[in-house]
Each structure stands twice: as structure tokens, then as C-alpha cells.
Length: 310
Image 1: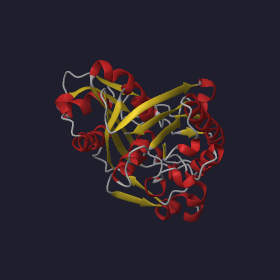
Image 2: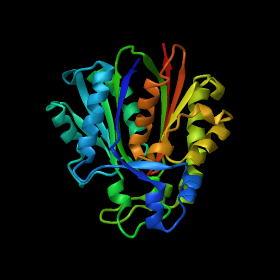
Image 3: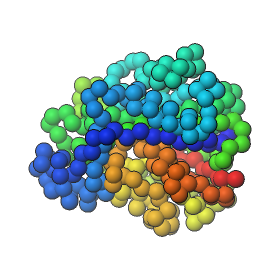
Image 4: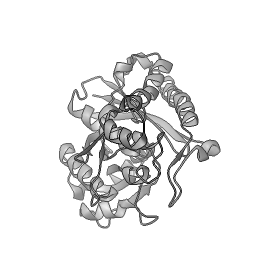
């Protein structure tokens, strides 16, 4: 049974407040907070890239997990904001980690990519051993393009997260997972090359608020668990209002959903791993904890993963 060995994260140092963005968007800072739950976000410096941020998060993750780079058998990297069409950031991150020769695979799945990476790693770890999952996003370079879109620009920030999945027992074993995809609404959240990010916010929120609880409930029912038995929900940090909706749909207290979106905004596929990394340190897993991961993103792709501490 595959297990989670640890997490890591990296956030750029530059803090961008609602006040700074509101002045450029001709809106009130309080309005941004009300519609998203976001008060500030981090923007990467011009010299920072998707790959360089991913490397920092990966190194922290490996150190915390007690895993050496030469003990990693595969690396999976998710990013929806890579600076070029190809190659993706996976091979560059692997090279910087001295993992030349190790298979490095890109997962260009915005928002849900880290969850898909964790699920794939859990299945592939029996063959490849320790697998490093990295998600890194530089969304500021996309949403800061003129003209700024009021419904898009305030939502996103930059950052990277990482996770190590091992094939043997670890502190947190992976119990089960579900993944789903449906291209029917693919046009409602997309990023074409040289074009601005296009998002039908109403459609995205509607679909996410249905599909995340559905996938979570599907997974819990299959494993004869109740939502009330889950100690913490680690979800893609898309929007605080969305997380509150998911909590209501599952019939649990919103306080069980770990949230850091107020400080970092939506960091796309990196957000779930950044949240998990912070939660892992404080309060962290305790014996018998049931942990639910979930994400929804462009495609549409969505799913959930259930884990349990020993």
C-alpha cells in the first residue's frame, strides 16, 4: 500500500495586496475579499520560473521526508502556466535535482494536476519506488497581462508544492482514490497560447461545487466512511466561497477544510500541496486521522484521494 512520506512548498517573497490590485482594477479591495476570500497573494520575481520554484519546493519536500534525490525513481510535475509549449518543466526540475536519467513526466493539468499526480504516483510507486510529485505555477505572468480582467486578475498567485509518495508503509497510507474528466465544459476555463486566461466563473463554480462533493462522497461511500469521520479536508484552494459550499454539501463544519487562500490566493495546481505542506507542519497528522484530498480544474478534471495515518 502506497504512503505519503512528506510535503514541501515554496512561496515567492513579493506580497501583492488587494489594495494594490484594486487601484489597477478600479474596484474596492473589500469587494475582492468578499467574492473570493483572498486578501493577498504572492508574485514571483521576473527571474523566477515555474521550474526554479518547483526545485525549491522539491528540495524542501525531500529533506522533510528524509528521502535522498538518488532514491527517487520518478518525478511527476504539474503546471498549467509553463513558460513554453515544450519541453515542460519536469526535465529541468529533475536536472536541477541531479535526477538525470530518472523519468520526468509533465502533467499540464491546471488546478487538479497535483491530485492527479498523487493518484498516479500511488499506482506507479510499486514499479518505480519513491515518486516525487511537484506542482508549480507562475500565474501572475498570465493574469497581469493588459487589459486586466477584474474577474480573473485578483484570484491568482504564484507558488510551488511537492509531495513524496513511497511504495511501502509510511506515516500516512493512501487508502483509495477516484479521478474523473469531462470535456463538455472545456471552453469555460482555458488558456490559449498568446491569449489571456478565459474563465466562465459561474460555470466553473457551479461545476466545482457539484463535482468535488460528489467525488468525495463517492470515495467515502466506497470505503464505508462518513464525511463526519474525516479529520481534515485538504482541497484545491480555488475560492473560499467554493470551499464553504463543498463543506455544506458534505454536511461538515467548514473549519475542517484547511484554508490558506486568504494569504496566497489561487495558485492553481500548486495550491493543494502548499496547503498540505502547511497543515503537515501545524497541526500535522495524528494517529487515526482520516484525510481527504480533493481538486477540480480545467478540462474539466476532478477527483479525490483518501488517506489515513497509522
